[in-house]
Image (cartoon, rainbow, N blue to C red):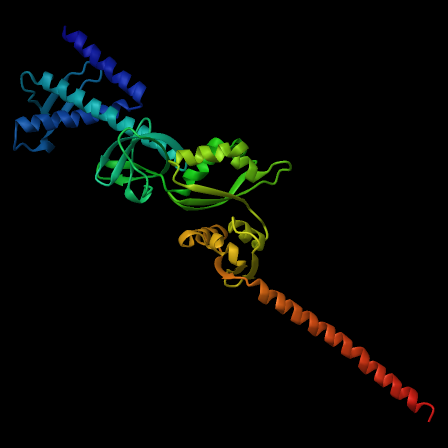
Length: 355
């Protein structure tokens, strides 16, 4: 009977080492330390430096030595076996967690499907497959409701040290969530035919995205919107229907780009100050509210998208027309005056010549 138990120990140890990737020597050394700790617990006050443990890798037999003397107590084999089991299981759990964390570290910057497991204070714990992730308050959409078993798509931001070791941090407010959803829903974005140049977002309210394609025959905006808006509507649905998404075409020319970014406002006139990165935008009265947006949201997002500080002013059509007329009259007057002077000079010459 003892021989069967010993062979099972050896088989179990080797199986763990093979399947889990745990080095046998490391596990054995850890088991030795655990057995010595168990012995010390039953014999308080001993000097640990004087004691050592031998553990047979093949049979699993453990012996305790004080210097060169065997001081293994009777029945200690059962305690040693139980300790070895606990240590091996702990090693397995640690190794599995390490492998899972390594896998998710490689997936930082991507999106995953998740489900809310529990709410711990202000933090939301999300099941993302093989692991649990935490979504702290700054990564949560403020006007979105979170409840148990709710399914949602999250963006993997990072792994960082927490109270219980390394934690995976996920987000619903990161711009990468929008980019990941477009890659999932729009094949042209996933393949690289359509490139997402810039994203400006106020999570839970509104988002502006600038897209570009250098391939002929591809409409970047149309590809992202989809037939009858089906693609962009699917992305809005993933965001709980809370966030409006404006898709514009990225432009090389800053003036055209800023005009596009201020949509749905139209008929805008733009003056740029490249040194201060400021754009002075003049819009008609009827387009002023659209250009600014509710509480300045439209112009704020356009500024984030383009990188320019945008100053919006009302363009008065009557004043502009009057100025144009005045300048035209001045030009005409100057043109009329010049030939008159020339004629007078010619006349004086003709009059002088006969004399």
